[in-house]
Image (tube, rainbow, N blue to C red; front, side):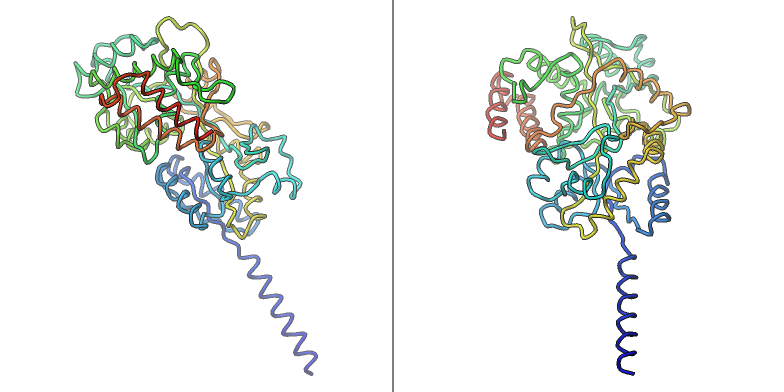
Length: 411
């Protein structure tokens, strides 16, 4: 009798353990749900749950807040199981051993990584997979330009400045907007450096900082400072985040904004009747070469502290499957991360369609991706740029000398 009781108890324990094992919930921390049409990400997560039994808890906040929360989780070992990542964060988190080596997980599961359009690596190992990719064109409030008497879209810096001045003189809006909050300094890569890259310039040479005696970078700094000096930029730039920048555009307070195509959905939701379009970023006067366009992505990674590494990798594989990846790219106004995905852009927003043409005529660039302490480098540049704009640093050469010295230490 005791023997049968023992067997029965063991059986119950195994059943209980099996039930516990099946009840896996993955936390997925990201900013994507905020920027997607309502229900898209939740629907994809629920379909994954229906297929696998693995629950997905979405932790969704704007980009800047997500960045702060993931950084806090990395420092305390409490990061969500699956995290949305910006390529600029990867080096730091990999070196902190806060995110998992995806190369090892893909090999363990026999996953064919040849289908991925890109992989962000540190020391030869993948730590982030780009799920979808975004270009950063310039968006224009067409009605504001009409009100200001501007009849043609600017193609050069001087034309852009003249258009911005006309907006300031003839409307209640500003010309351009840039988010320079030091808490989330991505405005340096997405808005500031975009002027440099659009005119064929670079901030690195052979993978190392090349800021000093860099003619195009010097001209870019002076150009942006002139926009500040002439009050053509929306106020509050030094405390502004990317989300606040989009609000300024949605509310008709700025005519021009350089931003991710992911924000098209937010703009349509916030201002359904706003008449806006995409244009190539104006280039330095006299530049006739091909333009670089900033590319950023919604990357995905797995927390090193997650107890569910295999299940988390299953979720990533699902997100990267051609059908799901195509749907996500369509909804996000983005380009897919799986080379076999075939998004149908026939019903896409006209602004996205125009932006796609701009993208095809340009070359993709983001020199910050994968750099050591990438966000720290942006913050250093940001701090010194603000000091130069305010006159506390007297010359652009001094500013770039100081930044170069600090950047070299990071390398």
